Length: 186
Image (cartoon, rainbow, N blue to C red; front, side, top):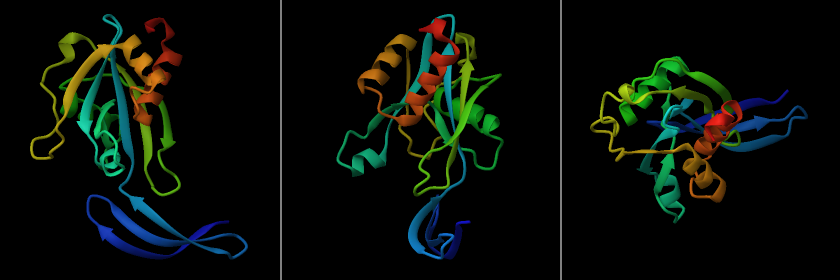
């Protein structure tokens, strides 16, 4: 069995960064780096009557650091912060889009970057109607998220995901999950 040995924390802030040694069953030692910030959640809100999805556009430091366009079109997402994933999903959607959600349909729980991070992302699909948008969204004041709320036809979002216009992996997965579970919407 593989085990972790020799954990050295090199940063403890929003996330924790560790240098660790992974030991293989034969005793071989492998130095690794691990980012640990806990589980996350991603929710794709969709209106089945109007056949639209609610996404957000915001600047992301990873693509910017890699020399690419910082603005990504995404499904609402965030850390669970110790909450049950569905509760965290409802909170994130309210903060980012202003939509009050009821029932969520679980679409899977997947490791987002198992080679270097501890994050398991919990995915949900959530139907809403226009009356469920009770706030402006845009994120939490003081967090510098710079969120723009974007409602778009499901078919347009699916085409953008297929053509590379939507490049966020969690959003592409959520759109594909919606298509598999509710093909008539497409």
